Amino acid sequence: MSTAVTERSEVELVRCLDEEGVVVPGAALPSISDDRLIELYSTMRLMRAIDLRLEGLQRMGRIGFFGSARGQEASVIGSGAALEKDDWVFPALRENALLLLRGWPLSRYFAHMFGNQLDPTRGRMQPMHFSAREVNVVSWSSCIANQLPQAVGAAWAMKHKRRPTVAMGYIGDGGTSEPDFAVALNNAAVWKAPCVVVIQNNQWAISVPLAKQCVAPSLAIKAQAFGLPGVRVDGNDLLAVYRETKAAVDRARRGEGPTLLELVTFRMGGHSSADDPSRYRHADEVATWAARCPLKRLRAWLESTGRWSEEKEQALAERQRQAISEAVKEAEKAPLPPPTDLVEDVYAAPPPALLRQKAALEAELADGWKPGGKAASGH
Image 1: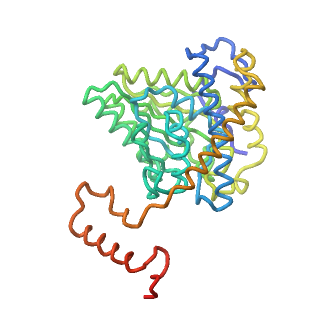
Image 2: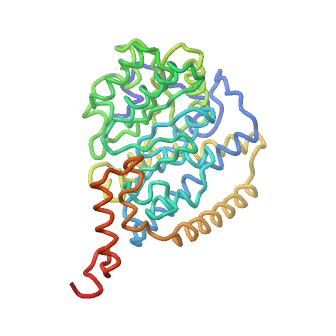
């Protein structure tokens, strides 16, 4: 079993709730309304339900790929909830539920996974590479960590234009070994860019545990080398994640510069649907983290304070089941993008060479050619 990060860190782990959902003595709870708390819990639960549905769709061959975020719901939703509507999100692989939290339709979420015309990227991006301008979420590109310099650049532009907005960039623990991580933190600190860098430390960079890629006592402590605050948070505690992220976002919005947050959590599933985690990690490690489930922890606290009940839980489960089923049906009915769509969104005014290629493709299609096969006329 890999050594737990909490046993080798010199940076305090911030918590509000313990693993049983009980308030930690002396913990200051965040200021957040009951309605917002229920919304965040509901979105965490929806995130888990979508994850399970995507797993089934992938196993049936109806989608090609997906990346699980099971076990990381509090890290994703708690951090994203601290942003305002006009702030920008630069995600990595496992933060896609933030689109839903920010108001994106569930049917379009699934349409992206099917890669059809209901998807804003019209099937051009690999699944899980969401992009939604209307909710200020920028697609990542699988080039590990390059979203961080982009987030810092966007934040600098916001500052230059005197806009009171913040950019949040996400990265996994494995991505902190990439040069772009250091570039982003250095530039953010030098420019005092209004941004927050969030590390989802889920203990594994595909098959490499954190202990084999980094000997620093924590990931948050790396902020000190760049001259910015580094905060280490229990990533399975939504209240602590929200409180510390809100403080970092507010700090950035006041013009006081960036913050590095390390959210300590765990990836319960594989790195992706093509990965078998049982080949490189022990079942007892998974069981230990399963007992720290962020959904169970928040639900226990909500129930203990009279905000939630088993009856409400069952009603929510049924509503979400129906919503997901309806969204899948609506998304799967949408047609695939036509082949001539390839030249769209490339140039504002397509150059002559591209227009000639489009005309040639249209002629082929009119003559009976079909994508993926021979022409209907036999030539």
